[in-house]
Image 1 (cartoon, rainbow, N blue to C red):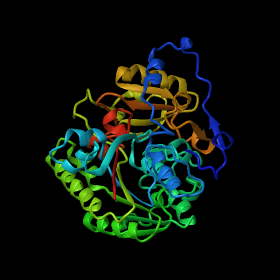
Image 2 (cartoon, one colour):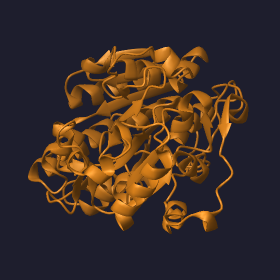
Image 3 (tube, rainbow, N blue to C red):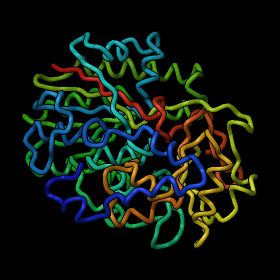
Length: 414
């Protein structure tokens, strides 16, 4: 969703190209590309949440895109990293408070949002904070090619360094709210206060660093009460870490979910008058078995490596950058090798299908892979030599399946 104060999307970027004639393709995969469940940009995605809340507080330059949300004077968004809608549904015993909010009990209502593609932390946090889809804010993956240098950039760790302002030039919703006289605050780990990702995605107002979840919940409630109109964001990361290391079927992950459930209830019970709490996430997660059928190793597969200059993204959401002139051959090869387990699209096919949003900014176009690969089964394209840590993770995310794409929008009001 573009901020009205910015140039229109079709003026500042490039619209989707005309879809190719599928009859000219030798492989039936284009039909599968068209069948991918595209995120609900503009009506039910993470990028639509903060603009809707800010519009309800009268912030200029924002538009309500989720009409069923009733305006409140004080709004708090609690984002739990890795807390998928499907995972809450499947773990009522570990998360009784959250599970109850899936329905209409306890004064709350619940519905899923789509994270956006890819369903990964850097991309989703930028969508949340800017109110824009990935094709506009320009963080379209875990690692993507920087067209200015030709090297991969890790957008979560911001390595190698690049100018945050040039990489993501649009204002955040917090900045717009702060300029409109709304009390804006972020309550998170002190580690994140000065990171480039925070700067481009979540800055505006005042950042408060607190170490424990309980401290964050208590301070978030205080910050809500600090203004007649307030917009507060708070964040918890450890559930995601437990999923990556141990999997969403593990006792460790379940223990973290129980703790998150208590944190949500703690914050909900402290809401000041005229407040709304929204619990959401950046992505869900799935466990992928450790065998060659489910973990396809790019570093050990000569066919997949042929003609590839750089491998970006992550196991379930790959950006594949071809050697100049080899783009068509790489696309054909990846379709043939990966078969029915992945959606495999060219860059323009993915744009046409709307994977990254309704339009793509010109500066973002060349950050996308020549070939875009999204998992639809419980599979990964790992890179055991160049990405040893990522390749060893149990829990993974990034693609468009419900388990990783659907995130909660759970509401409690005072």
